[in-house]
Length: 89
Length: 452
Image (cartoon, rainbow over all chains, first blue to last red; front, top):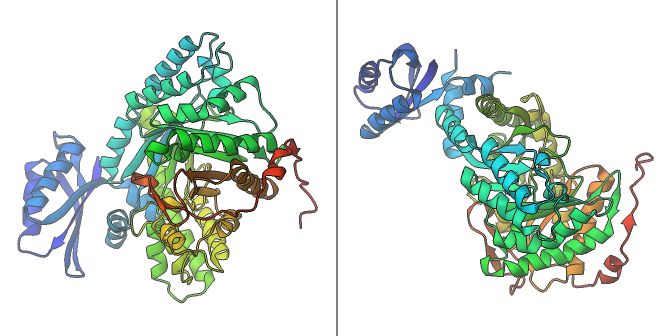
């Protein structure tokens, strides 16, 4: 299943590397990455496929959140349909 | 490809602008629970509710986590109990409310609605017993909500019922006075009640509804308020357009949740109610939207026009975003539940007469308004009659959820807590309406042509 990872927080060295490593540990495949700094805020979104992970969405989500909390980053995992629905007619 | 700006916009709507799904409400028909033995009927009611809604809360919480959208309330609405209980040979209808309360608590939902009667053209035996039991039923239960429909455009206004509602509301307040008269927050009097409303206190599962259905109510005054801040000083054409676009986004979210919930629960999708439902939280207020349009304080001249624009634009924007729109759909103006309305009422700007005018163009009616505890029952009935007249003549739903705050006077406040908020006690006219109310009978249905 495709899902969206968003990472928001203060810019610091190694965010992308750290998050990618964490995703690799969880056997989550990254399909697309887009990253920018908006209003001094590091903002990254990744489209991922979590079906390769042995864990369910809730577990992956809470492990990512836990990792983010440790680095002062807001990391969330959400299904992608909501963004399509809200921003396309 | 999803645009990163859109993603951030959505996340900010949820995190900072209080965007949420207000309620996922499961409507359950209890028509097959009628039995001549009241005890057996109550057992059937409990069994059916707990069977049908067994997974409602769990499923809603799962959707909440997967999509990252808060779902504030999970609720149940049932067939008006007067229709179900009527078959039972008993005068004690409170036991039906208790069965509902127990079943709802077992399911873990926040509210259950449907302790209701539809009497727009007169009472049946069951209606009479149910209405008589309302004060006790609402005081001995915690999460049961009730409503009575006293008028419709096709039937006119049942003034006998209107009169009785005045006394009923006073009695509900008296029996729940130790709990801040909170029983009145769980009871609403309707004109043109809708059968698929997911919002409380007026939710019930209408007789034309299927066996079981999922209705979803969205929220989002904060998002509209935020969107309007970016078009300061622009014309109303731009304001209306901005509200429409925002309403579309909010409703789309409701549609996704409704579709997902109905699929996972194996229950038919009913409607999305695209209402702007405020909460007492700062930044989640309908009044502040009206003020953002250029009014110094909500309740001043221009408020009705601002609300009319808002209500209409919300409907127009939302209607394309969902396959089935229903319920009350529009902007709610519950005084105690809206931070801006509370402030406007405390400042003495927002008065009952202005609120009545606003109900001509909002989605429902006089909602969560506290009046002095010594307000005569006939005055409350007359307020209901006025509101019913607006609904009946204008072919819209109107409602009255009013709280005679026992022991309190104008300027005091009543604390309900949670989503129900804080109600400043506002003044009613001291002149009597008693003779008018005591006439009884029915006000005939209005003409549907020659409408000027």
